[in-house]
Length: 223
Image (cartoon, rainbow, N blue to C red):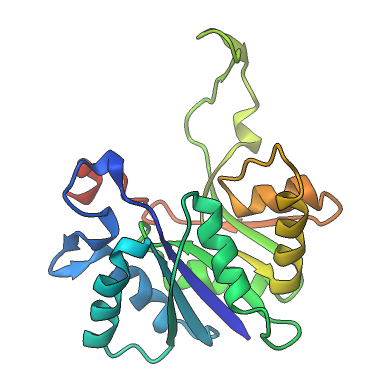
C-alpha cells in the first residue's frame, strides 16, 4: 500500500497573506488542490491523507467535499512543528498492511510531476528511504555558526537541493521518529534527516527532482 500524505499544517507566515499559502489560488485552484490532484492521479498511489492546522480543518473538509478525489481517505490535524505533521500522518496508518510505504509531500509544492512521483515509487521497490533532489547550480557557502564569514565551500558537484516528496517504508520512518522523540535535543525539519540521524545504517536513496517542483513560500513564488 502506497499512502501519500499531503502536509499542510503550516500557517504560511512568510507569505504575509490573510490565510495559509496552501489555500491561496492559482488559476482558480488552491495550491493544496493542485498538490492533491497530482497524487490522486498518480498510478501506484492507493490512499491520501491530508494534514492541516486545526484552525483550518473545517475549511479543508469543505475543499475535499467539493472535489471528486477518489483516494483521499482522511483529513487530520497537524502539530505546532513541521515534523509533527509527518508524525501524525505516520501514526494515522499504524495498522496499514505490512510492507506499506508513506510518501510525504509539502502541500506548498503544487507542481510536482507524475514523472517525479513515478521515480520515487520505482525507487521504493529497492530502497527503504527515498528523497528527491536537484543538483545545485549555485556555489554553496558554509558559514561559521557565530559569524557571517565563510568557513568552507563544499564541492558543488555533490550538493543537491532537497525537494519533496520524501518516501519511506512505513515501519522504518515510524521507528526513526520513535528514536527521535526519545532524544531531548531532537530537531527535525526534514524527514530524510530524521532517518539519516537516527537510523544511519539505512541508506537514503535520492532520485532526480524537477526545477518546476517549486515551493510556494513568498508572494513572488505565487506569481
